[in-house]
Length: 390
Image: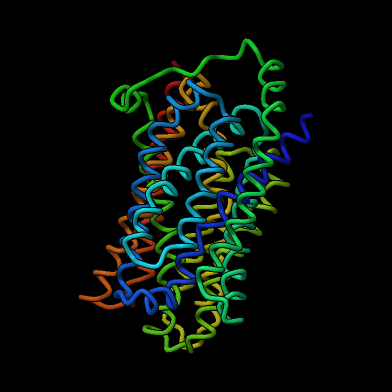
């Protein structure tokens, strides 16, 4: 039962990642068909992120009223419905409409599943959970690319992923008895609190972890979105090479999370977070170095991805230990919301800076976000050490 439920959890996170890269991979064709400016992709993305923030903040309430299994199953079904809506849409405003339920589904399942794994499973499992998300987010662009290259259209790309998502949603409903058995086996555990945002922010160290999460997701999104533009605009790399190495940032992150699973339990979340942040800083410096040969800068993108690998899963996994299991569901939801705020607003902010200054500020911008993470996690560790001494 334990292994079967774990397989369902991994599949649920693959389903969470599947739609995340569809918009970016299909938009060059979609915007032409829909006859809207290229920048309109940002509107859809912000609607999705807005829904995700709302559902992340509501995850504690939803999980208490239902349970993790039901939240996961209904969220997967809502995600499948949203993908079907995208697949039949023929106007920009229809895409905006279907972006709302997609965002709501993503935030609820993300927060609920992360908290459940943080409490019931090891750091190794958490790392492989997020590697599963990477599998989903890596697969869907290939599906979209196949549909576009064979003249099936972007709608069919979404419809193909819809069928996969529908199958995964059905599996999560069929797996509901496994959650019931797991819940009975863990009766007597601390009950999550229904807490307010104001009360959570008063917990020692919480503002620092929210800053760290904000900085991490801001860096992750900015690094992936603007890598190709930086390589082409600042280093005169040909677009095909630049695009390939920008994709390797995500592949490096996914591979790094698989590798992190083998060492996370041995070295602990705190150590892996610091190793990851310092590795990202090394990668940023490699990108920044004024060397005419672009190999070092291109490799720096991969190093940033590898460094990013352990940070997100280890921060989530450490939440129950750092702040208490009874607070963790509320905290994970708020952390998710802080993360999505960073990934929603910081990449467009860099786009404005690049427009009015120069795309060459890319590594400096990433470096500032890494320093924010170093500062906030350092302050968090001091708070936790002081609380432990009291």
